Image (cartoon, rainbow, N blue to C red):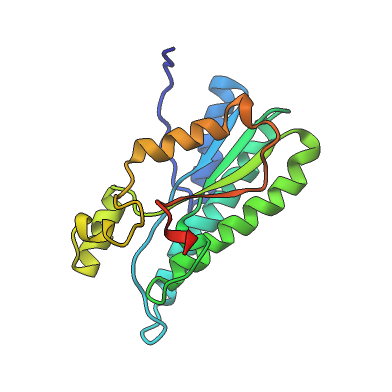
Amino acid sequence: MKFDIEAIACDVTSPASVQAAFAKIRGQHGRIDVLVNNAGLAGGDSIDAPDEAFFEAVVQSNLTGSWRCCAAALPMMTRGGRIVCVSSVLGLKAVPDQIAYTAAKHGVIGLMKSLALALAPRGITVNAVCPGWVETDMARSRFAELGITRDQAAQGVPMGSVLQPAEVAALIVHLASPACAQLTGQAIALDGGVSAG
């Protein structure tokens, strides 16, 4: 099946940009069946060198942006709609050198759980995917910050490998499928076993 859908640029940290993007979606399609919140910003930080602007930017892109897109999408969603928030393994556990990102991704899971309860009577499911290392530009930047290679990062994963973006996408597609009509309020770790220990 082929879909001919125009990409619409959107800055999730800007209320005006989000409203404009979703107005365009309404005009072109009239409804939203699936919303995937995947925008984000990451990086290392330390409480010993606090950077409030960085903290706010990470929370705005990861958490507030997800909330903002949900609020904009819901008026166009009907029963059977799906919302999938991309959190992180750091939404399930913590590390000492990514305080803002860890806090924001924990927040995404809290947002997801609250929305799952609020939207269940409308027949809309809300879940979160919590990936470990995924081979993306953001991960490669983090590897550089840490002074490690992808293979070295994979050594810390019980399954011994870094995820590919297609693996995360496949789980998101499954969560949007009819098979998951009763699955809601769940934070699903896709991390090669990192969160199991």
